[in-house]
Amino acid sequence: MTAGELLGIMWRRWYIVVAGLILTMWGSSSLAAVERTYWVEVQLVFIQPGSASVANVSDQIVPSLINFAGIVQRRVTETGNPAELPSSGATLYGSGVREGYSITLPNSGTQWAASYSTPILVVQAVGRSPEAARETLDRVLAEVDVAATELQNAQGAPPESHVFIERSPATPQVIDVGGTKIGQLKGMAALAGVGLAMTGSGAVGFDRMMQKRRPAPAVPERP
Image 1 (spheres, helix red, strand yellow):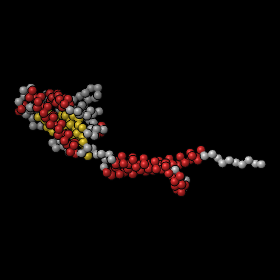
Image 2: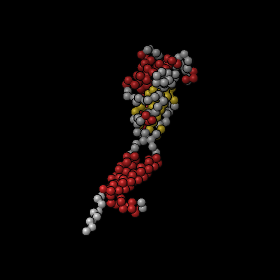
Image 3: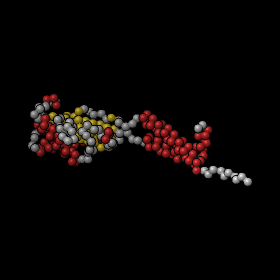
Image 4: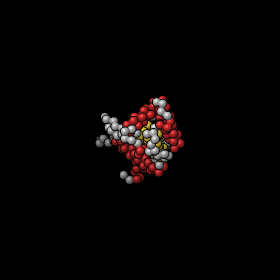
């Protein structure tokens, strides 16, 4: 089929072309309107009283610290609405969450036999802006500090013997995990190409179908 024949078909089936262009423009605008997502993560390491770092934590006290971290996690979870992750190693944005937070006690075992070997809580937060992700993270970290303090005060532990919670990193960075503008433009260009190709194919296919359905000219009878 020549370019002239294709243009002729598209001119005859202009309504097919218009419908295809509208759908292509709608798909491109939807792709361009995709919002960005910002993610931040921090690990909260529970350290025994009197220790300056996790390296000085006694092996005998690690199980107690893990239990305490789990209790703090449950306390924060009960008073909030964290996202449920498919696994302790999953990320919020990778799980499809765009706004919210998660707080998990890493499980080094399997789904049939859980194993918690480190006194660490992993807190993640996502938002539509860096400020929103940071605000959510700060709020959850404050709730962890309050829960840990209240639990230890309830046991009559003096402040100097409280479990210390170290943040790693101390100043977590908010990461832009949304698509880049260049990526969006490439996606729009690819979508436009596919849309135009499908529009042309649809017009040609519809034209051929209508040509087949057209009745053949009557043949005059011989005298």
